[in-house]
Length: 489
Ligand code: HEM
Ligand SMILES: *[C@@H]1O[C@H](CO)[C@@H](O)[C@H](O)[C@H]1NC(C)=O
Picture 1 (cartoon, protein in one colour):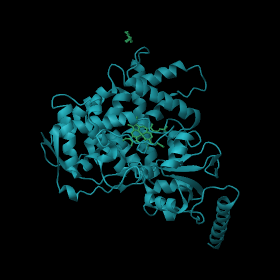
Picture 2 (cartoon, protein in one colour):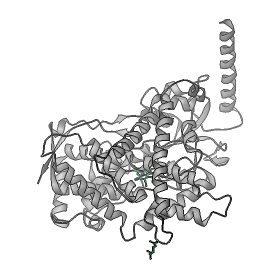
Picture 3 (cartoon, helix red, strand yellow):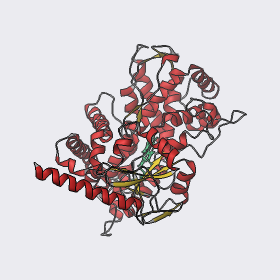
Picture 4 (cartoon, rainbow, N blue to C red):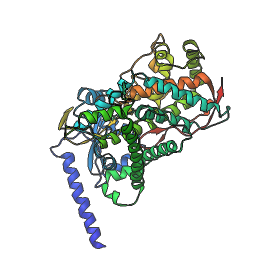
């Protein structure tokens, strides 16, 4: 027992000296609060509302500061000017992704979301090209989303206007859109495989966002204990097996001269590069890339739609104006299409304002510097963790007066035209920005206009009483759960 105590004291002293050196030595990291031994600043930051804590620290130390999550320093970037400089002007230096241990175990450095270097560059470029070229083929991504929106409307009709929680159905839409793009087919909403798949993705995001996993990535020794990370590995294996089955099916029917979907394109690329021993295009990378597209593209989009509907319920005057635009531009008898967006500035502004207000990814998964960086008079060594506060840009009160208010006027000029803003960083910015922005916005526009074309939204409580405060879960801002009635028009 005594031995343990002595050991503990020694360890604390050592780590304190280590931190003190890093903090005040020649490194010249940006300033920040003094870290405690071993835990660093975790108790000051994570135990409270992390966004608020970081805002307060930015007020105290300026837009670039250092905090310690455990023993390792993390540089925090706050505010538009700093984010623009780091992400856009000096995109390369800040484009690394931290290998937070649980995900690197599953992703093995492959795919897009957690990869780095050449693997990341080539996989990202290839995926973007395929997504773009599929926008132009015989059956475009737009067609696929329109078809999905119609299925959703049909399903919502079955409720006959009785109260329902839109969670499940809205989660189906983006999952099916990605399935259509990657597998060439959608699933029936009652399909058991589909339900299992969605459940798995949902659960894995939940685990990822849990305090336990965040603690584990600060203190990797904890992985030796039992805990939800083991469930995460089991789920990941199940998802990978499902993806492999789809790939096998594609291999059997592949026609090299007419690729039908993402998998076909990737298989052809593997074939073309089969003599290159260092090719990034391997079967393992295909599996992880698909895994990434699903995990990055489903929960994000469905949460935005679900949260968006809640804002529309709370602001019936806004919803009425969208409906007016739908009547004028689309009418009742055809599906909405992306061309319509140019004639619907108000609807466009509302969708941007929804994304700004819900602040879905306040602080994306940590980056890391790819080389030693001299930034604003500080020295940030290669491999330092970097957190970017997108939330600080979306809530900038000079660009968006009264940022806490839901006001589509934030994206409209005096004449009612749509007004773009460089501060709209809901999809981040620069080299590592979301590759699904176009796809996601298409889904939001086509799905929400289709819903409003066919239904009136009726809340179960007074609109003023609707609470839109997010249920923070550490990774995504989630809306509180709610019910509503879809009354057919
Ligand atoms: C409303 C929906 C969405 C939002 C708000 C969103 C937001 C984001 C954000 C904030 C990032 C992190 C960027 C960074 O680290 O700086 C990201 C990355 C990413 N997103 Fe999305 N996203 C959405 C939908 C999608 C969809 C539909 C796809 C699928 C095609 C997708 C694929 C990705 C990928 C692959 C990355 C990683 C990019 C990289 O590391 O190079 N996202 N997204
Ligand atoms: C492969 O696709 C090409 C082009 O669409 C088509 O002409 C050809 O018949 C297809 N081959 C097979 C075996 O289906």
